[in-house]
Image (cartoon, rainbow, N blue to C red):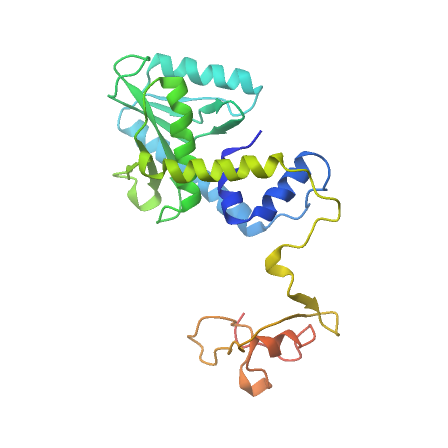
Length: 269
């Protein structure tokens, strides 16, 4: 069953979809390594969500917190029960329809009529990023689509809350604008999941086929047509680890042939 995060992952990397499917079907062993930086970002994101809910409670809004763990059917039932009760805010609602399901950060009540009564709900996503990314839009559009089934009203807006906007947290955008894109990505993902799983080992992604191990065994050489020049000024963007022409390395292709560890101490990085 695809998750809402699978949409953004598939849009960014089809090979990642194949890896995730292999893990889910016990064909591929999951990586045991976890990026500490991503763990820190996840903890900061959870803290931001707690701050946002506290902000809503300080506005005297009724906030209902739903459980995050349990059987999927039970979590869906609790979400629908909370929506029928009509609180101002529902935290961590579980939404599902057919083969798709996910858990939104927040639902907020709006005055659009539905089979719930003279109100319905709109999904919010709390993000640390100051700009809304495409993957977040895909997730929110999926939540809006799932709400149509539960609330019985078309959810036209999707909303994000970013850290600098706690005092005015809603940044609305028309879900209908992005619905065709969301449907297209969903169709691509569903089609990919229906394909026969390839024989192991998995094929190398197209972007990496031009990479071959160098003779030293410690570097990678990539076929390039135009040498990429390394920056030599401290304020330049790019490969900050090289010390520039003073070490007789001026291109990325040249840097690829340098055995590790580097025989000199980089000025930065």
